[in-house]
Length: 252
Image 1 (cartoon, rainbow, N blue to C red):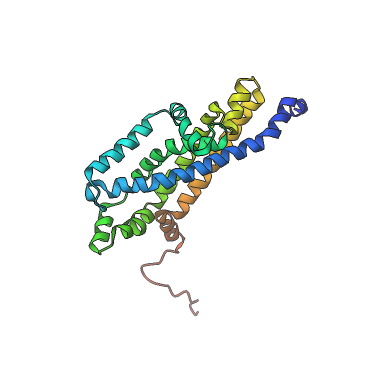
Image 2 (image 1 turned 90 degrees about the vertical axis):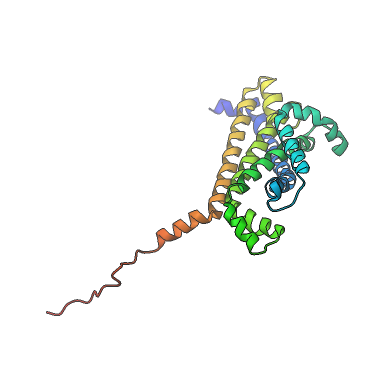
């Protein structure tokens, strides 16, 4: 065991791992945030604009949006990275490194996020929307005060899934020199046959996924009204149907 930690390859791994983890988290969090800036409104529009349900959108526009989302989702991420390289050069001036990997991450994840949001919003009971419309709520009020709050637990589960998916995309982006744990595993671990680098990167990725999933699940459960209401009911002491009993000691 002592020889393992004194191995030069092991020492190099522990030196480079913190920065690789930082690069991975940086690209994942920034990519997720930008993907939701695009994907969240798009997912809402796909539901609210369907058949003029809440927002009146021309059917041709809805067809174009659905087709664009399906096309981007059908392209494998490795191929999409190569296609988006010119766009990365235009926006950032480079196609190599962690910042450059954010561009293909956003392009790939935004339509995925849109479908995740769409699926979450479709779980809402149509009767709730009809009641809001009957009360005279505007489309903006229905979206911000009814749809998003009522679907919050499902949306948070979708956020967790999207973050983990973008994390895996970022690891694959290491194949084109994007940096992070993916680059460490591929460029140094696999190509240079450095087993500590390879398996150490895999273990760190597994740990990151577990942490993100645990935080997302806990956050979703905390905001779920159904779970919280059931727990509050269980905490209440049962009330006897006969009312309180007289527990006074009888006189002898």
